[in-house]
Image 1 (cartoon, rainbow, N blue to C red):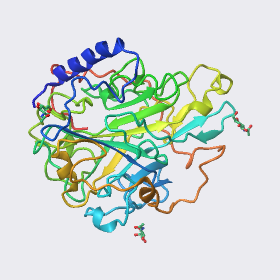
Image 2: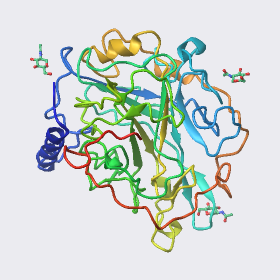
Image 3: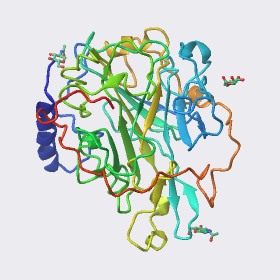
Length: 406
Ligand SMILES: *[C@@H]1O[C@H](CO)[C@@H](O)[C@H](O)[C@H]1NC(C)=O
Ligand SMILES: *[C@@H]1O[C@H](CO)[C@@H](O)[C@H](O)[C@H]1NC(C)=O
Ligand SMILES: *[C@@H]1O[C@H](CO)[C@@H](O)[C@H](O)[C@H]1NC(C)=O
């Protein structure tokens, strides 16, 4: 199935119109226009992973450094460590926190903290995702913190799974302003502000509803905030990693692909010809205990900070180390299936997955009211220059259509 970004964006807009006439929420976006995932077409895996550990290490950006600059929340296989070899980590893992039990990959992001008016910080806990999605998945709706992971493939043989040792990174932990890019990266990293209990306001595709999505942390109280972070969908086809952990992957010629649950890339650039599955991470932060207006900043700003120390949200980032066993991921990508139960893919129970943990390497308190964020992370100097808006919307073909090396 070939579908341009412009068409996909138009479909999303059409869905928005269709959806606005209904009142019941369908998660995580309208199913109208989506395939039935009946074995003949696209795959959209969507599965839960419990928290594996919260720790201040980062095997990609600062391998071997204990502690690292800022804190992360991590899910996946128990080979996670301060440094990780460029080899098959599934062979080094004994367990995983994910419901697909052959997925020993690791996925990690920053944490979210609330900063009270008196200057102290409290970690924002994560809550499970909505069960109300195609097949009702009890795992994703009951995880202990953690991340909901998505993989999209347009159809059998259309994307290639990753080789053992592959890893990649999205974002920039030092970013405090709009990223300078030919693309609109707001479709690739955003925060969704729920407008009421039970994921209210979750009507449209991730990062595509300006009423509830923003690239910055929401400037108003929300009934929970959802982070969505998407990885690029083209790869040079060779390198397991690169010095910046980004330049071996790239966006398609037409721009970063929105999350549509169907396609991943129309055309990959010659430098990065291999189409890879679109991976999206989803994290739900329970901000409801922190909605007392009396404890919000008096200057009208919002009170949440990422564990990078960033109050803007622009530093939202994600790390991926591939660790599926054997061909297990390719089997799923080619199965034309949806969510957490796909033909040929092994699963485990919530209880089994919850038994998988790794010890914290950095012994520091991160719960309760803290005077400083874990590690009191160094902040980049505030600059007023170079915060220009992107020149392309990235949602369609047109201006700035050149391969972007992240
Ligand atoms: C499966 O879904 C595709 C659309 O993705 C549709 O064209 C096809 O007819 C369906 N096949 C069956 C057997 O339902
Ligand atoms: C993490 O790495 C250290 C140092 O190489 C090693 O001693 C330890 O066993 C590793 N832990 C895990 C869980 O693999
Ligand atoms: C700071 O504010 C929080 C939230 O109101 C409160 O729970 C905490 O006790 C306060 N800490 C101090 C040291 O005043």
